[in-house]
Length: 211
Image 1 (tube, one colour):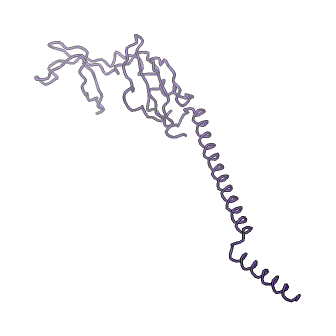
Image 2 (spheres, one colour):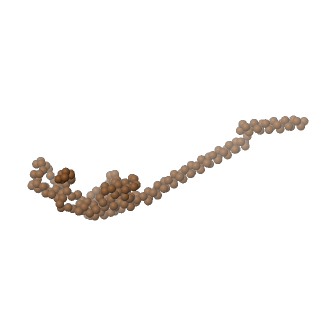
Image 3 (tube, helix red, strand yellow):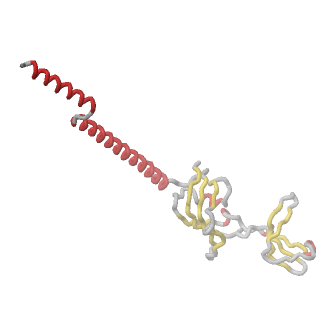
């Protein structure tokens, strides 16, 4: 009689072992769900860390942009408007692409070149450039009166017209006609802004490359 309960207990033990092996026991199911929840939690933490890292990089770039300043050797882009002492606008980049140049390379007039150094990104400033740091003083020795017959007979010469003139060394320069008579034509090789103090409103739009 005792052998029969022993056999029953033995069968129950075998059934439990089989059920565990087949994954049908509830405890096994609960363990699988627990692992799944832990995995999902780890993925959410990873995504959160990635977002925080990306935001930190964006913040770093924003801080760098706020503190970026133009210096000698930088290639920059600026918007500008130039005016004379009477307020007349003689040139402006508004409505066009920003002006790009490398600071300190002699690509701009000296006063303009010097005026952008230290300018913060997106900052605007107004600078006044005296004539000697702009297009130089007005030189009377660059004004020449030429006989009208030095030009072709059919030439239509008018004040303000720009011409090309050849110097003794072969260099070609631009001259403007400032006066015309029946016998003479006055040519001026000065820049049109020579002898003038200039004012510029400048905004630093971009630092293309840093020195």
